[in-house]
Amino acid sequence: MNKLILIIKREFIAKVRNKTFIIMTLLSPLLMIGMIALVAFLTKSSLEKKSTIAYVDESGYFLENDLKDSNTIHFENLTSIGLVQAKVIVSESTQEGLLFFPRNENIDEVAKNIQFFSTDSPGIVTISELESIIAKKLQNEKMLQLNVDIQMLEKTKVNVDINLSNFSGEKSSKLINGIKIGLGMGAGYMIMLFIIVYGAMVMRSVIEEKTSRIIEVIISSVRPFQLMLGKIFGMAAAGLTQFFIWGVLLFIGLIISSFVFGIDLSGNLKTAQIPAEQMEVLTQGKGQFILLEIMNLPLFSMFILFIMYFLCGYLLYSSIYASIGAAVDNETDSQQFMLPVLMPLMIAVYVGFATVINDPHGTIATVFSMIPFTSPIVMLMRIPFGVPWWQILISLLILFITFLGVVWIAAKIYRVGILMYGKKVNYREIYKWLKY
Image (cartoon, rainbow, N blue to C red; front, side):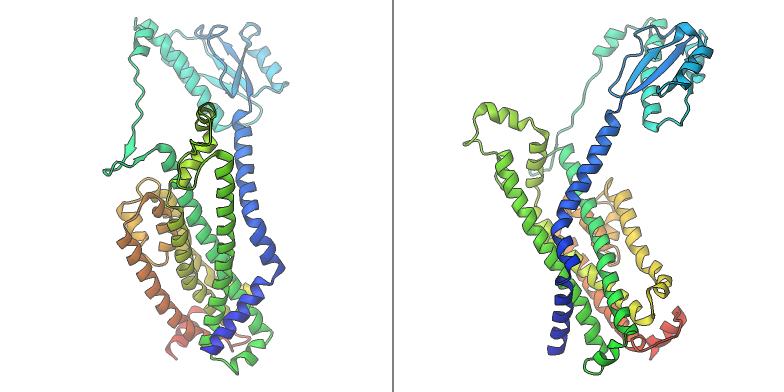
């Protein structure tokens, strides 16, 4: 036991003293926030970009002001100069393209034969918006032909806004569901990312010690099983240290946000310290409302479960990574064994994005949140939507038992492969090692 603790301490100190580890621990939250802000800025810039689209109308259904500008499209009428001349002008200008409405008294035929000329392929969003604007206009024209009162028809429209709540009376909203989806997807993706990163670190460490022959000296004083566990737990301790620092930074960020937005950490507004006029303005801010909704989530329990699933998932996969590192002589040879390791993680992410979003409590989501090789990702994606504690406990128990079984198998591979040099290992050879 003392030797195991020494190995864990050695691996932990070697990792946390690394300058790259220190820098990335401090900068990763800022990089993550900066990346999200950059994506949001680029998306907003793309959506706010206003394109100019010219049109030539021979159908007679689109008069001068019939095609009204939208937030992203400005229309320019070139009907007076004709299609041929309009093509020349638009092709030589910075306009997005040219719409052509053919001459036809039948509205349905006009709708089927509209053409869009452009130098470059237009974006899907632009075409969809054009189709929506044109369809609305032609629909109004058709209703006029059928003597349908458009104003009366508009008055019949009803906006439905469903209020969400559970049977205990706790209210929810579409926004909070979106936040839950975002948190679940982010947590699941981070688990996958860190399992791959830290597992690869364990494998790389084993390969380096094996190729430098340092492992021969270490094995003379400790058992291979102790060395493997020491590397796994040492890297796990470094990962938990990193998460702890991020948690502290997140807590500090929430405290700062509470003062900036006037929110206490229980999720209630500080009405006693804010005048009524400022309160009305404050509650109308989207950023403040989103932060309030986030604070109403069980963030502490979600963080604890994130740590638990990261730890169990990491222990499971890192033992596999350690056995692969012991079986090969370099990272190039390890590639043939990586696909079976990465496949469950890829399936988990796919199930999360394809199933958990639409049906977080469905059979598929529940089953994959119990399968140990996918549960660290799928269960974390489900947790923001509320998962019964018995399901979480069963999932963690199955995951831990599987870890013990995988460690037992990995140890048999490790103790044989750690001293094997100059031999290309395949699955048949590894199977022989398991029977030793």
